[in-house]
Length: 283
View (cartoon, rainbow, N blue to C red):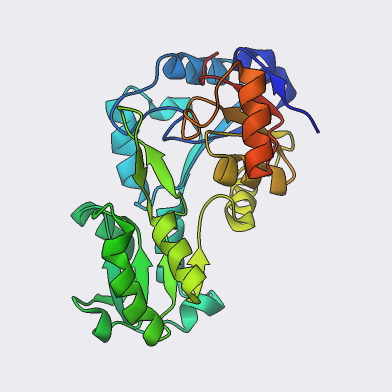
């Protein structure tokens, strides 16, 4: 399989009905919208395409609405927003999944801020201040920014065989200055490597792609767009769709040379090949 390098979304827009668009690294950097992203979204809608913002954000939907709206990414640009955090909330609330049914009442949570605790609002569970009092762990943020901070807590959780829910499977995110910041997926992966039980939500799990397909069942030609090979591109590929890799995101500093050389180097390194690639998300 080879990857086709394109200069903009317009080159392939007619080939797909549904576009699954990542947030961080594609549309914005968490604070600023990327140049050309608003125009690309406007033109997608003008072309009559269905659009789902598919994010590994560990927060509820409202946070994405507010964040994107403040950057000029209007609700009219998309049909749905799907976040891994909202999926966790839905499972906690419904309590009809076997994994969730066996959870106890008390949870210890790793967060970004108080806002990220909304993932468990009104679900009949109770937050505890100490790992020794918890029945399970929720990882929705990593505000400490250093894995070494979390390891002693994970060891306590492992000693008690506590399950961990990962509400954001990303390992890192790109900051406005181009640096990478640790994300919950790094903590969850460390716990899994220690022998802990982890329930993953979001990309690249099959569950989230099936959910998106159910939102737009009449759309059969699907393109997943993102800047993470291990999450966005692998998820889209595994779900049976095509994928568009935005090179200048998370992997922006991993390879040099022209776009073709960068993709070849990254694909070989990570063992994941996108269908298409472009440097930035532009029309």
